[in-house]
Amino acid sequence: MTKEYCSERKELQTQMAAKGFVLDDKLREFEQPLPVEVVGLAFQDNAEPRGSSKVNSLWEIHPAIVKIVSPRELQKIK
Image 1 (cartoon, rainbow, N blue to C red):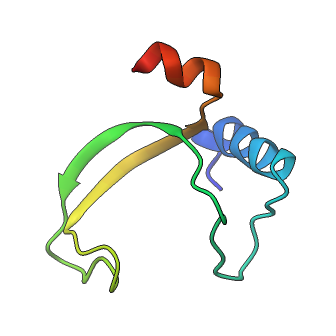
Image 2: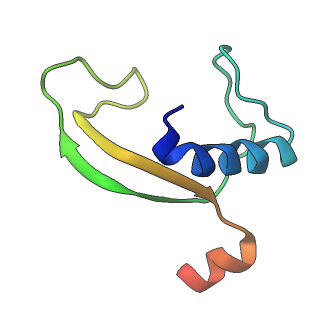
């Protein structure tokens, strides 16, 4: 965790913990998707293999600042 984005990452960890999800080295998924807002610069990175069997993309977002959006905030976005 870099110092530059430390507070944003800690906030995301707090939001996820409130939903019962703890970040660790185990690869897990939420049972239900969470609406999120993502801010960052999108670019293609052909230098490394990207994606998975579910997601096939050369695109990355850096820095990816992620915020879990409440249902009320989601209605404002729509």
